[in-house]
Amino acid sequence: AGFTWISAAGDSGPTLNPHTCDSFEAQFPAASPYVVSVGGNKINKTDGVQSAWMHSGGGFSTYAKRPPCQEEAVQNYLNNTTLPPNPGGKRYTTSGRAFPDVSGFAAYYPMVIEGKFYPWGSGTSAAAPQFAGIITLIQIQRYQKGLGPLGPLIQTLYKLKNGVGFDVTVGETYATSRQGCKGDILPGFQVSKGWDPATGLGSPKYNILLEQLLDLGNKE
Image 1 (cartoon, rainbow, N blue to C red):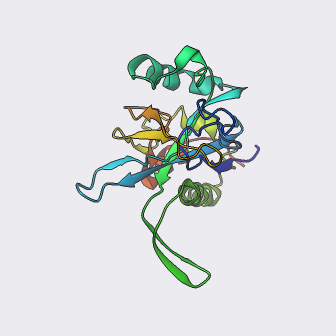
Image 2: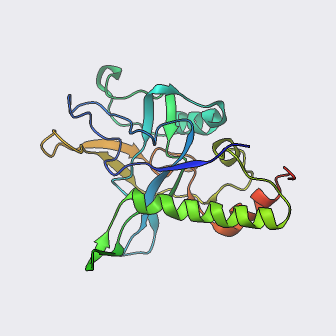
């Protein structure tokens, strides 16, 4: 049946290439077609609205082809959303593997590291374990009902009739660099209804995913 690999999408938006500082560089393994990539969202402290985390990694791979399961969702985004500037078509491509696939809370985490308290930790490395935990709990439910493993999950996520949970439709990302670009910031991607390169298919809800993933056959 195979495995599901889950990866954080990164914390630099579409991420500036440190050699050019004017092109986007999709992060690996988040942009691999063999993983489920998890971006970031947040709860706005002023109005309680769930929106994209501005640093959420996401975009399009230059190297990996887009899996067929993504095509409809991604084309819907490309056809209905204003994209960031792309001078000469050299800043980014839209033809490759699109990521993230889903998103989780990635901002304002209280953390304790080596005994020291940090009140506002952030990162998609906090969002990815959330999704992994949800899938693990659902897999346990499947085993208890005599159902087999889910296997590679990316194709299944894009086929779910009721979606993954909450569709995040507010916010945008900004491209920064992990090194070498001296604080440069470029506009990233807008969030939209359905899939987008900031929050993917949305923020997973356990009950919505559980109901649909328990409906899948695959008896042991």
